[in-house]
Image (cartoon, rainbow, N blue to C red; front, side, top):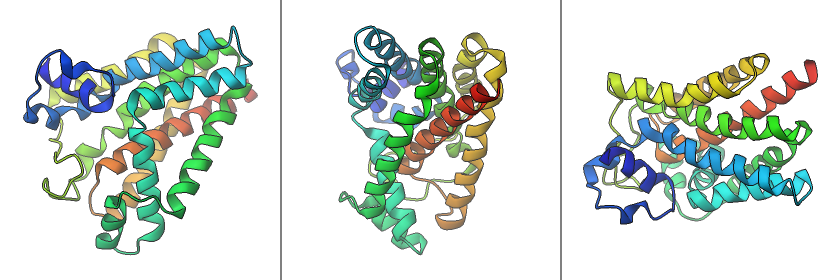
Length: 249
């Protein structure tokens, strides 16, 4: 339970830290519980969208829903995407890429990455009807976090613990942690997503493989920024896939 509490403390800005003190060791085990946190962040997005759409145009309600998650997470994942874009866009070597990603200043690639990501995230799903968009918002958040979490199983950490931003090196998942991660990520797809949209779950897996190859080639590992960027890009691909299937069927 302490590891789960640590995950909510780490991945959100809500005052879960007031419940009780969390040991530093617990933060090494937060990634397998990331999809569980997605039940909260994705649920808030879906609920905000549903309520907002009763008072606002769908485009504005969806924008407010996106902002609600950014506020809950403190733009943690968006910061990772910006640093990832800067590092892989401006770096030509492992050392230089890691240096750029650690720099707190955002560069041109980071700005462009965020702008295009947010534009796609806001516009792509708007063709979906409200009930389906609410379901996809919840399922996409949880499933994509489950996909991104697998980075810690397939790559080593690219920095030392002392050099990491969070001063934490995540441990690889044990068998039961992998099972927990998979169940938490897949359960919404099974229970809530209409069967004909099930193939959309493949898109984040393909994006994950592509990003994994990029990280292995350039960094020979991953960083926390890589995890955040992977989550957001996997989620975006999920929206693209659902919209494509919606148009086809």
